[in-house]
Length: 347
Image 1 (spheres, rainbow, N blue to C red):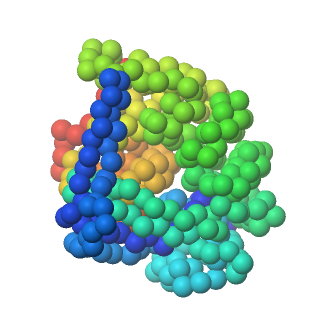
Image 2 (cartoon, helix red, strand yellow; image 1 turned 90 degrees about the horizontal axis):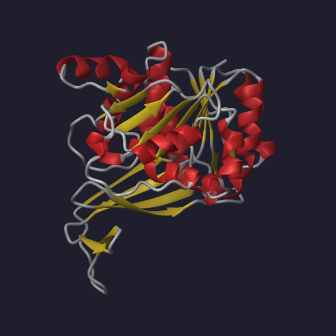
């Protein structure tokens, strides 16, 4: 029996940074888009290079393990050099690999992460095995025996198992933490509502929440005047549409602006925890999984859990690699103790 089962993607990530990369901004009347560019036709020098395992299923499993939870990972990989790297990485943890799906007929997921001097990134992703998880391949006994099922974004055809595993976990009294991805959100609100009804914790970023609810956040620089906890009224409307059951906690992250949560009675706002930014890859996985783990540790103290999630996420973005920089609960608590002015707000 384990505490947590995670299900999601597994990839081998290659990080590439070049001082020759440019950030180009294109502005319209109501929209601004940023692009990473390189000189066309040139041989571009690589300034820094690193490789590491990644993917939502792997990142969150390793984070839960580092936080002291007995963890099992359900991911799908091929039988190639990249799958060997993922299996070797798991050997350095206590994560159970008994539920990993290995298929020699597909390739392991692979990503090239182009990192900018600002710390943000553009990902070139080959989904591979991540996009073809089948219902028959999932270890339902492992899910049934866990206290928590953490669902990272599922890609391609793998998304077809989502509603089934969420319903199965809910019917077997397994707590569900659902980190929504764009593949399922594209299926529309009526579909996602069925998932929401069976998930105790739902985490989305602002763009995903907008896609799920079809509510756009209108540009306005007067957000602080909307409420004591600085939540834009359009985000408040997102919360109200996403919360379809009384037992749910909804979280919406907003990049460098911090994160918000809603339990049906109180809105919470937590700013980002300060720290150096090397790469933002894996920040969302670290935040969402740490929030779920912290709710368990703090007896569902939502504000404290947001703070702990932000601290751990800051640790991840300070290093290359989505599974680097994880902190233990003791290390998180120590950082919070050393920054007494860092806190959350409610309204």
